[in-house]
Image (tube, rainbow, N blue to C red; front, side, top):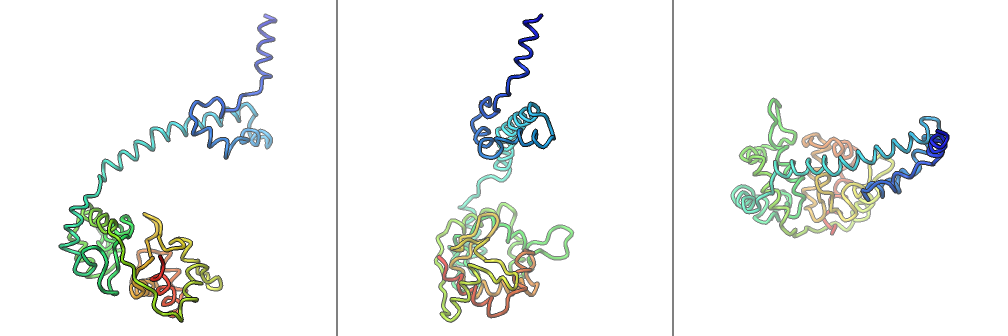
Length: 270
């Protein structure tokens, strides 16, 4: 019995092994090493849990995170891929030639500044805009109200929108150009640094230094017609385009000259 008690005492005095060493999954180990290596000790020092319990908690969290990553997220991705399917570029091209080419060009490079260039734009953004032109069930009007685009969007299913958006996203952009040299400095300053006195953030913060944007979040701006960008910023300011609360708030703080300057600068971004 004495030997048994001695073994038990030694076991209790033994310091728990670091969970990142015990974990067979290398990915959680890397995460634990970089962010939470001392989490149990911190919890213990502040009196929230015992040291042994703290390590046990970290190991449990690591195991759960591994399971969710390996199974939960993988299943979600598979489910989304299965439900959405891969866009059909051939169908997208057919829709573009039949419905969109008259205004936006067969390849998405609009021949006129009144209509935006769609070539190279992020597919997720294009699909969202098309969906915004259609009124949702029960809504009095669509999130983005435009009679012409609303009529075209009404003809398209969700799959049609994804297909034509993917097609235009796959096309190379023929960029527009900045034209007003007198506005370059003002436009550059607004795009890169914003206007602190007015609470206007830098455009580059969301749309990137070169205007490339971020898929599914922020549109590509580079090489867009200055006239189109100007019309959209003005629309946000006036409330005629109301499908982005952040842009509505930002545009409301810009003067006509500031809108014109940053729009012209954006046209010259590459």
